Image 1 (tube, one colour):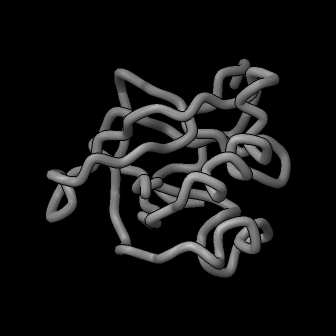
Image 2 (image 1 turned 180 degrees about the vertical axis):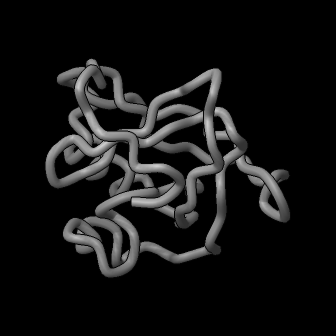
Length: 116
């Protein structure tokens, strides 16, 4: 099982939650202030940023088959996102979690602050 930080449409109530709903919810969490999220037109993209903020999201325990499905959804093979270790803060800072970082240009995209 892998802990995965989700911050957008995969969260409970999100448009793509069905991709993760059979996995196990662990906790709400927020990242360390080293990321920003941008509106990509119906879904967000999180990027590393020197002037980052704490992104609010959820941590899920995901099995290997679930991870493979998420990688397809996030188009890791096509280069849209990369699954990487994500740094959390607060009570969850000690958790080792992965999340999806957006790899394409954010030029002209709206900064969404701390929450999608």
